[in-house]
Each structure stands twice: as C-alpha cells, then as structure tokens.
Length: 327
Ligand SMILES: Cc1ncc(C[n+]2csc(CCOP(=O)(O)OP(=O)(O)O)c2C)c(N)n1
Ligand SMILES: [Mg+2]
Image 1 (cartoon, rainbow, N blue to C red):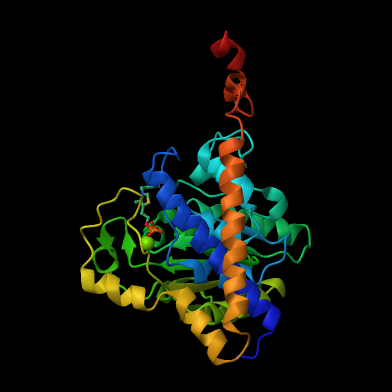
Image 2: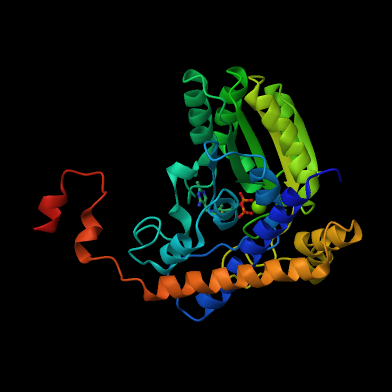
C-alpha cells in the first residue's frame, strides 16, 4: 500500500463520518425524531469514500436513494445534512426535500435521487457539459445492482461511450434490489460484464476494500479526465441494514449477513492501517472521538433549528399557479 499517510487517514475519517452519522440516524429514526424515509448506507462506506477520494470539488456525482454516504464523501456538511433529514429550515433543501433529495451544486453534488436509475442520463448530461466547455471535470454516477436493469442504464452508458464522455459509472452491487436477490433479478453475476456492450472497460472490485476501490476508480478517473471516455466499475458490497429503516429484512439468510459483516470495510481498514504501522491505535481512536463529537453537534444543530415557514412551501416550485393555489 504505497499511498500517502494523510490520504489513508482521511479515508478512514470519512468512512467513520458515514458510519457514525448513519448509526445515529437509524437510532433517531427509530425514536421518531426523523420523518420520511431513510435508506441506510451502513456497510457500504468503502465504495463512496474510495471513489470520492479521487475527485476534486468541481467534479460531479449523481447519487441514489441510498445517498448519505456519497454526499458525505463528496464533502457534504453534516450540519446541513442532519437538518435536512430533520426537515428543518437550515437543511440543504430548506427542509423540503429530506433524505432522498439532498444536493449541493457548489460541491458537485447533483443530487440524491428517489428515481432508481435516475442518475445515468444526468451523469451523461453533466459529462457532455464538461466536454463542451472543455473542462477536465469528471462525473461519477453511483447506482445499484437493481438500477442496472433500468432502461436508463443503457441510454446513459451508451451515450457516454459513443461520445467519449468523462463519466465513471460506479455500481454498488449490494446483492439486492429491495428484497430481490441479484440471482433473481439478473442472469449475470458481474454487472461489469455489461461494459462489453458499450465497448468500455468493465472492472469488478471488492467494494469493502477501500484501497481496492480507490485504485480502480483512480484508473477510471484518469481515463475519463484525459478524454478517453467512460468506464464501468462494479464494487461488490453489502448493506448491513434492511432496504429502508423499518424493513423486517426476512429475505436474507442469517449466515449470509454474518459472513458479510465479518468483511465489513472499516474494521478491516483499521486493522490494515495498524498492521502496516501507518499510525498508532490512539490516533485512530482520536479520529473516532472527533467524528462522534461532530455528529452530535450536527444533531444539536438540527434539533435547535426552526421548522420551515409555511410560506416556504410554495417557494422554489416550478409552477406559475402558486399564487392561485395559495390564495
Ligand atoms: C424508477 C423506480 N422504480 C422503482 C422504484 C422503487 N425502488 C426503490 S429502491 C429500489 C431497489 C433499488 O435497488 P438497487 O438499485 O440495487 O439499490 P439498493 O437499494 O440496493 O442500494 C426500487 C425498485 C423507484 N424508486 N424508482
Ligand atoms: Mg442493490
């Protein structure tokens, strides 16, 4: 592992930010303090962090319904994210979007998305914009194994490939689309096999190994930035929680869940950092404490923030009928 110490420790910190943020979200949701729907990213942290550690602020990402990890990895602020999940006026979408609509264009976050497969064509569009503007920005499109069966998968990747657009398509294959296992929703084992149909590189990596993800995305980003076109990287991973918070999750065998939990990304990476003598255990514990504190502050920020004003309901809405509806 010939990577710089700072980069490695930053990847550890980012994964813990996601882990601790998401763990608290599951608790707060169960307590009824967070409204709406929540799809937890717990267990998949290495994919977002290994990927986004290759990106600069002006690069773009498109996210999914399971987006908190992507947003944090791309630089999303915990206070604004937490406030949005609480539906508060200080949130990223002024409390009107919630978990599945968080965006921050200044950070290149083109949005979480409740539409499965909604990101492919947005990513191709962002890639086309960068190419036409002669910018060297890259767009990463995160999507799930289930989304790889949507028609937009074909449309987005085909256009990106035929026009050599600077896009990296990152499949988070967590082996399930809701309760349907991958073997029941597609005949192939590796989603990356589908890259052949578009004449682009297709690679499968261990999505619970943050360094492996980082290295393979690095190649794909380099290729995209230098004008050679898109790649399809499949990261095999597993979600620790149900599809959504509240899902009884009675469709996954216990042994399968246990096997994957034994391979979870943060414990593995922590062990590796210590074995390689990158740092002492105290340094990692200090990061854990700092992140815990940061998350608790975000919760306090959200809880103390005001609800959106009633008039806000008709602001930022694309219709000229607002006055009529409002009166
Ligand atoms: C167009 C569309 N069809 C169906 C749904 C309902 N739905 C929400 S999540 C999901 C499964 C997505 O599976 P996958 O892409 O593997 O993502 P994961 O939840 O595993 O991260 C479905 C079918 C939706 N939100 N949008
Ligand atoms: Mg899935």
